[in-house]
Image (tube, rainbow, N blue to C red; front, side, top):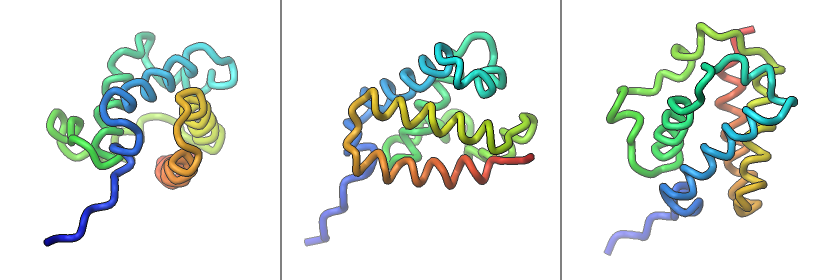
Length: 129
C-alpha cells in the first residue's frame, strides 16, 4: 500500500472556496487600503480579471487544480510581470497585502507562515528594479 501523501496547502486552506476567498480579500485590501496604492496602480481599473487569475494561479501553486495552466499554459510569472516596474516597495506591499488577507481569512498560523515564506521567494524573484 503506497504511503499517504501529505495534505497540500490547497487542501489545508480548505480547497477552492477558501482560495477564492483569499484572492478576493487580497484584492479588496489592495483596492481599499492606502498602504497598497503603489501596487494598486500596477493593475487595471477593474480587478475582476486579476482576481480570477490570482485564484486560478493559487489553486495550482498550492497543489490543487491547475486552472491557470489549463487556460494560459505555464505561468511564466517573471516574464508576464516584466512590463511592470517591480522593486522592493512593490514586493513589500504585495506581501503585506497577502499577509493581511491571510490574517483576515483566519488561515492557520503555521500554514500562513509557510505560504508567506514561499510568497516572499516568488515576489522577490519578480523584482526587476
